[in-house]
Length: 302
Ligand code: MTE
Picture 1 (cartoon, rainbow, N blue to C red):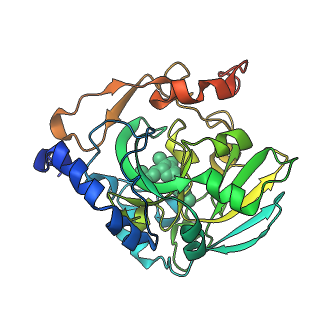
Picture 2 (cartoon, rainbow, N blue to C red):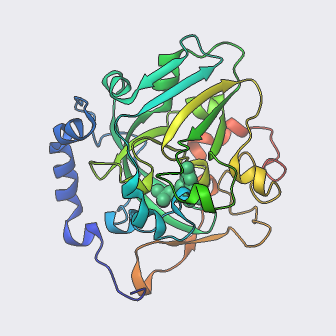
């Protein structure tokens, strides 16, 4: 099985056709996510001009420890997760705290496609055509108070549907955090779908964070709580192994993980002949985000 050479989406669908199809499909994304989309779909300047990894690979090779630690566990078990209705508690240093229903959120934001590189700290990578909206739209909906400096995120805690929460030795619920300027950056999105389809449950339905210049574990799935705070939030992997998983976790080929190099990565889905490739600083988003870290020591603040 591991040696099967899989066809990529781009192998069976010429890229030009795929792009046209996606432009025509604007209404379909609207249907899938309950939102009327404008003409912007597929046209974002933040989308990378790369062939996306096949949906089959994106949705079968996952990390979602709430469903187990194996790469295939999320795809096997996530169907148990109830994702409708869904709401997000927004609290802490905001003008309008409260429970925000996902349907109401989606009526007020602009969704678009973002094709992003995705790089896991374990050294595998993918290219994912996300559908989503900029996190800054959600934060502005709630109104960020002047003193807020960080945003903390939490995943759903529901052990009866998420078996890993009973068996996997992480502190639940899964937690992540960003500095406020990172959270407000236009590259940072809340994703609701992949390939014009609603988000597969194993990929973090119905709403997950995507921060493309950081290691994948920062991109927390199935979010139910967003808290604005003036203190650096605790994050799951940092609590477990602070020397291995820093708060920033920016993709950086020059800073090794204590147990392996980060200089190269292996694209998922390439089959037997997939070549490893060089990892790019900030995962290829250096031009857009390097200035957020001006004057910071990126080794100390790994
Ligand atoms: N979010 C939650 N709630 N639980 C998790 O175990 N795993 C993280 C991140 N978000 C994880 C999570 C890690 S380690 C990675 S690499 C990405 O999700 C994987 O996302 P994907 O399965 O969509 O590729």
